[in-house]
Length: 254
Image 1 (tube, helix red, strand yellow):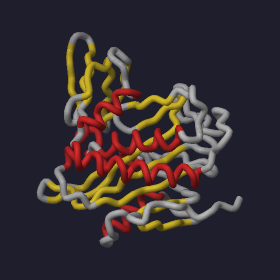
Image 2 (spheres, rainbow, N blue to C red):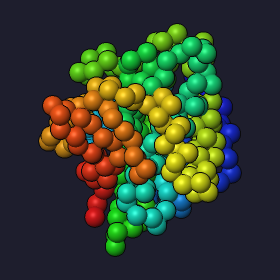
Image 3 (cartoon, rainbow, N blue to C red):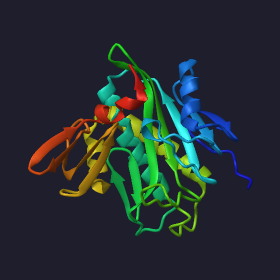
């Protein structure tokens, strides 16, 4: 299959790989060697895809795997909000190829579902020194052409859900434009506009939420997303707030 060269904003430096272990791992190696902010790794095929906490991501065929390097020099808690930003941006990019009534939802803090099947996932990884993030990799995997049939959860793909268009290059182009736009919005307006946008398609009050945190599992009903992106769950009349740093800390070095 011949694909055109992605037309992405000039602020990105595109690194295109025919095949690699994973777009995230490749971006991490580049970041450790000093790659510039805005470096965008796009892997046409990845052999050892990575999900959160280093878990294996089944990459499939002709799906989208990309990772963006940022050097924010901001505190870890603020940088973890990038997962919600990337979720919104990916969903907006996907929706450009969708039918108007497709049911996209967000699962806190890094998944997109389509008609209840997992369609895409975002991971964050990086390095923190002196309480500031020196570099961070925002990685995205989207099931464009196919999806795993058996991974212990229901999955979905754009093609499998009947999209008339399922072009990963167009998806990459749209995602990079949205991500740049929302980064600027985050910088100018703070987190509140991201919070409102996430809640529009995120968990609704009393939705059941399941979270895996390292070796522990938390289940409860959704009550709130706070001003820093933390989620509040209620279970058996007990309320617990899970912060974004707690969720993502397993993929960072400190």
